[in-house]
Image (tube, rainbow, N blue to C red; front, top):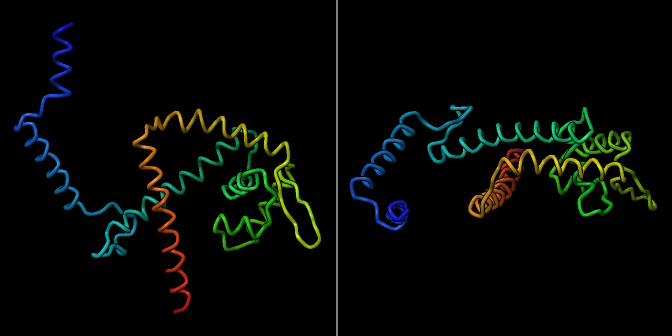
Length: 203
């Protein structure tokens, strides 16, 4: 027992040997060199800029992660009892349920950054037909809210998300901090893409 404790102590508290440090640095250098030789991981090599190859890598990651996320929300909601929904249908239902407040069509489009209101309007009508969203009219203003049935499906979605996604993530404080920073960066970049789109539209 004493020997095992001593070995653990040495692994944790004793400084690494110079040879081990040198080997680790060499391996890291080789990985960096191989990455530089193979080039960035992208889906459109013709768009790679010498000023920011990383932006092309980010865009490729955004494409594959976005498609994976859309596939996930559809399958998770199907498991929760609502089948044949599009990713936008699912996201609209979640936002309508958000904070249990009635929401206008314009508010939903604004928060979700959807330019075409017809897409969200179609999703709302589809969700109303399924009985998970209800509309309320006050004067000329129409608002939308989740029904009891809609909230029950959303709660089931949450339970499945916890067991299938969050449990698999096994996030500790450090990973959660990284994810939070990534979310902040995505919000910043979304603003940059919006501004770039306006600039391109004016050409």
